[in-house]
Length: 160
Image (tube, rainbow, N blue to C red; front, side, top):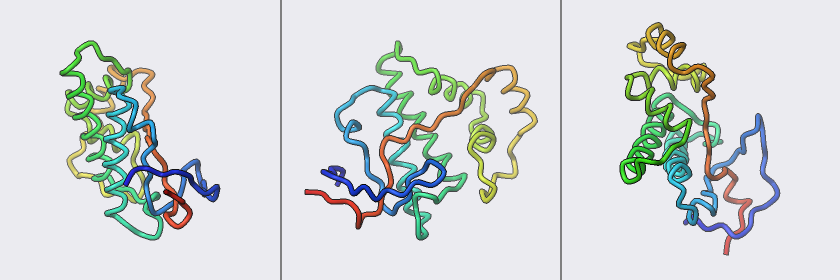
């Protein structure tokens, strides 16, 4: 169920992230057909499902390398599918991420830009080659994560 009529004001933020045990997709995800936005909807849903599978007291804070990789791959798959249907589409970040993927460095990219201390990283990451490639091909790059929705505690949300 994606529709949420009203939310309690009791959303706890820490480090700019909402805590919670339930992910709520933003209403605009259902009505805005912008291809970049819909690609990030895919990412947001995939990541939130993975976070719920990891579990814990606060799934909103759960993360793993595998979880982030799966969500970024789905983000790219959705973007490339949309791009195939309309080759004139452009999104600076998603197009850069596509180039990273095409160069074979998506794992290294995710580890470098989004890695957490507790993540178990693959042993075959080629960070040296990626850093060389990145210096040449990603000058001024700004990594992005656009979550289309928010976390909250189910007990705090009123729906009708």
